[in-house]
Length: 381
Image 1 (tube, helix red, strand yellow):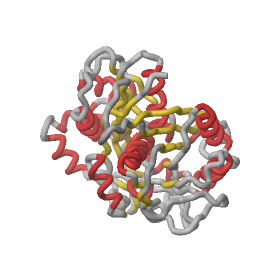
Image 2 (cartoon, one colour):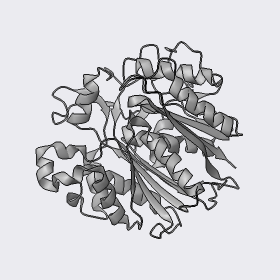
Image 3 (spheres, one colour):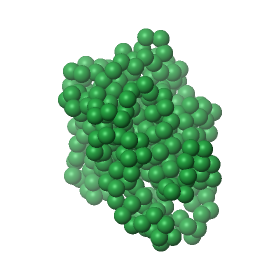
């Protein structure tokens, strides 16, 4: 089987414009989820993790005219540019593929002032992917993966499989989503938003916090050293659909359990650490605890990153995978921000303070609307 290595990465959230900035803020136990007043998004204050638009504009201005691009495109380009600058691969040749992971794309073009400025066709995801392809001169037709909240994890699984099938040598993956009135009102209609910063797996949790984010991860078939003699690789990955409900997860964790179980049967690796989806909704966290226990992984350390930067939708699987990889490299499992006392029925090992330990493998799991689930493992070699 062809090995798939991690070449470089980038994370942009409310906690910073690089993976390092985000990690430093998370180590300091800072959260980007704040009470926000923005009448363009909601008539009343709300909790969310939003990226500073002025900082984004200024940063983008250092290399291009931000007025020619939407806010979504600015984020994606900034993230891609940072990750691509840190790799030696030739991403303009025929051996490289670009994948865009997003749930909503240029959703702010539904607003009339933006539609008039950029044109309605820019809202189509395929159109956005082609714009990014053209900007970075990627040769091949881009691929768009938009499968609810597992989009990012599924994009990495897809990219790794294409490399293993010898169709490409390199795959550049970007996951981006922004928060608008459309997005916030949609989640609000489900009554799924928290009244404060979200508290994954906690007894007092009462909903999720939305967040903006952009993450880029570059996969390659060429070995990439990561400090000393270690390499970080993408292992097996599986996605499933339990077809339980259009928005509610399976109460038995069936779909996620099947994805994890298939991975464990196929992979010879032992799981050292689990990066959970951990949205802080009552049903998602409970379902994850059931699936993890059914898979026999209840004693493995588990955390959720969503208390730091919220639920970033199509970017979540990318940026959370990158932080899982960061944990492997740095031998640190970060705490689950907002967690104090378990609020799930299964006694899983939720990390409530940073743990310094040798980590060789990270299992990343994700679930989303429509009953979709995914499980993916990263490892050190």
